Length: 260
Image 1 (cartoon, rainbow, N blue to C red):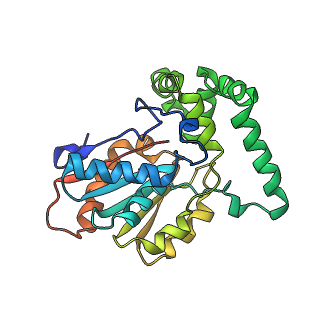
Image 2 (cartoon, rainbow, N blue to C red):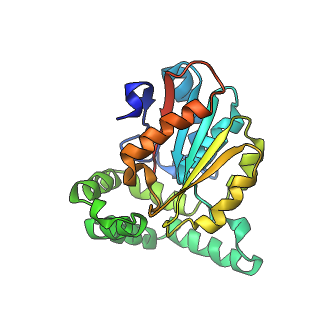
Image 3 (cartoon, one colour):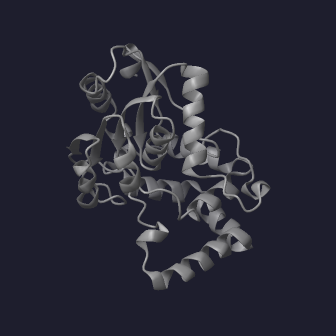
């Protein structure tokens, strides 16, 4: 990896995802466990316990909310942040019309508390479904290889993965990017693939107007996952950006995570 040649680089699985532990959300009773606060605490604890220093965060999609929340909760840890196609959270309850909110809650209860949720997950957790989803978010579908499909699918077949998935897709509360960005003290750079079908760049451009955002960079002909589509060129760009965001004088720490 290009960044690893001159930096310490870590890629972590957020709890519940990848090959991390997957606690059953029902074990926490009425208190939500899979939230941005939980993952932000995990990231900050990782920096304190493993990195043992401040770090830069490089985050994609939902991971961008995690990075922002972590920087808000413990601002002394994050030196700077790069957000790649951060999730707009268009399904957030605040972004739904008032008359649709009861229907959303009913549908969420259906998924969480009936066999319909597990049946839905069983339909999604297949090679064919994963391939179709990846072909949507990758502008260049030639990058959707069988190896990639299996790497994403296999963790989703682990015990507990279905419960985590259903819990998170029913998580329509929590913070929005536009609520967190004004609270962030570190410099932020946003990069956005202009062919992202899920997070339209036309809506994302507004985030470039926040005082904490140093620059908003358009990535031509790139979909939702720039870290895969532009692996080498993006790594080089990150190196340049880390130098640009020189809020510190030491550049040997970078915390990096790329959840889809």
